[in-house]
Image (cartoon, rainbow, N blue to C red):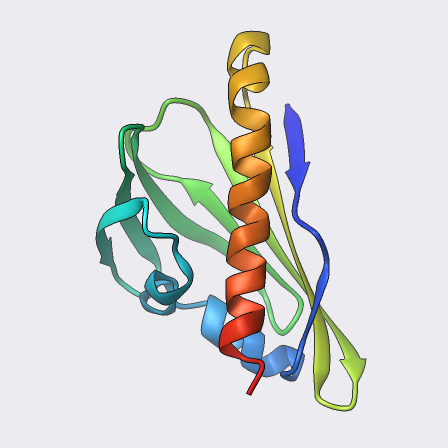
Length: 134
């Protein structure tokens, strides 16, 4: 299993608010990069296509209130994966947010996908931070 992690960023929101936002896939579309198309979601699941790459499906598997959300692959995907959203309250209405991605990648796929996946995770966290900077 390959683990890829985003940077940990401070978000100007209480952990309970971040948890509420990110526990609902309907709130994810606004943080997705422009390469993500054909977005479809319910509160617990989503499907989308990454332009010129793959179609993916994800489902929320587990929620630990205000601290962790575990998301797993659903349907067809090029590889098995689990996405972890870690939220930590740091006080004064601020929280740390970090994403970790565990994927079953063969060595060739790891070499090709590791950097783009890390960039993707960092982009999601930074876009969420930007949206909540006001």
